[in-house]
Length: 257
Image (cartoon, rainbow, N blue to C red; front, side):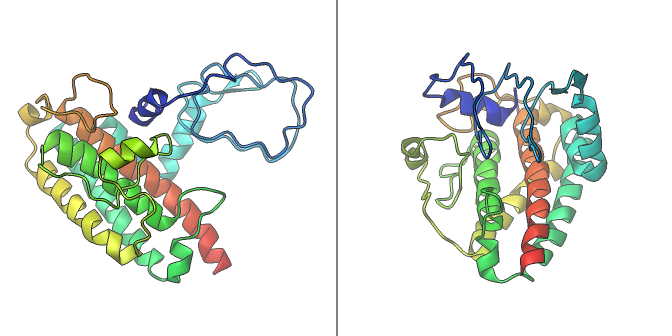
């Protein structure tokens, strides 16, 4: 289970649909978001334009296991994913961060060509470009600032948590969920966090990668061992995956600008 999926499971407050059976229903337009779907089975159904997105350890379509194909194709289109996922040595972490910095530099230049209103616009219900920057700010605050660096006040109020986090938990971290900063405003702390990550990976050693952190990323996370390599890899993977989402949605925003 991914780090994000693990956290979402902590917030699952309803099991009313667990093991449910839905037969002979018109589910056109149904959206299932931020849900635990292990064991989900869709059989003898029909339709068009079916979209499935998320983290799946195994995905079978019409009796064909497409897991490896989907992962390979995503890695082909977005090589930073593989660099982040496979990072093992200090040099691997540095190479992955080099790629991520380069990707975001070009993508931020691209985003700035759009009107500010477009950068707050959601595509198909996904986070806006600005909201994506806010989420990555929080990811770095938690996994780098709090867990690895053990800062006294690691969380910026503009950080945006995963949708599964209850508002009361977000409030405990000092987050202002309804904030509406501009792109440039949120980039000030966001780029500062990226610079902190650069300093950390530049100084990485094998011993530091294996150091056990004195804190977990945030109180809602499970009480277990958090090693530096695990925490930094979460940052790498969050950056790579959300960059993928960002450029996907930027293309839609540009087409409609």
